[in-house]
Length: 155
Image 1: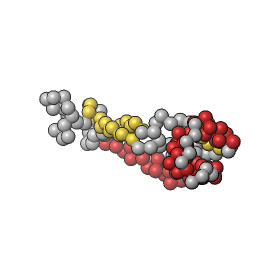
Image 2: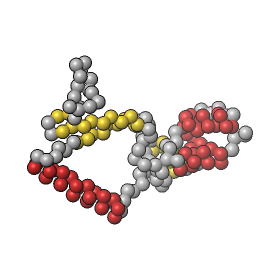
Image 3: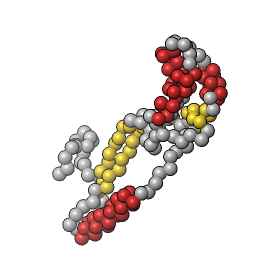
Image 4: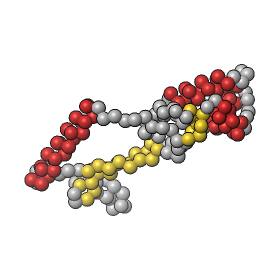
């Protein structure tokens, strides 16, 4: 296919609609694969500028606290207060969970966007590795074996 500026703009718009940050190397690869054109990154940057795109952090969409979310938070706090009372009474044990994670796209901070454009993606940054920890007031929920590795069952 011959180079068509509209194809490049449609590609950028499609990626933005999918919530993907557009970088120059992505457009370079697109042009090479779909149009058979090999252009420099600086040329692509110039093209972006001519099309009204700027290299910047995306503007996040405003998050709202609708009534359903407020009710969910309120319900959680009521259940947590009840769990604390039961633990103090000695009839229950609270297990605190901690989630640590690393996003696969964590490093992408900036991309090319139209000046007034808001990012069409969540705060998530792609696939992630998740590590869960479970703790009680007296220490970790799991025990360790003779090699120092956590065991799957608690005794």
